[in-house]
Image (cartoon, rainbow, N blue to C red; front, top):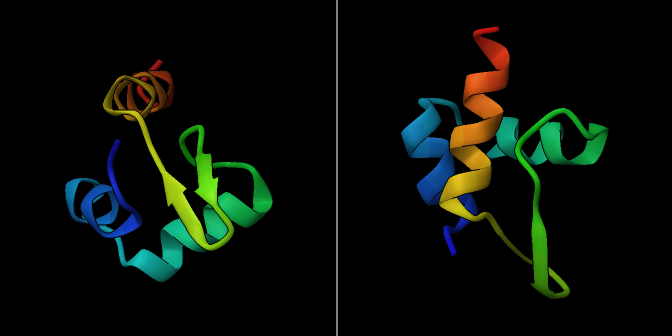
Length: 54
């Protein structure tokens, strides 16, 4: 499971941008392991990226 910082770095956006996407439902699928601890599966991030290029 990837952290917000790890995903933001891979997508070349700031963590705050990823947080904003998360809040509006337009980013990769997120899993909450506890309050304030969002995590992303690498497969979900890749699938989200592939969906953008279609």
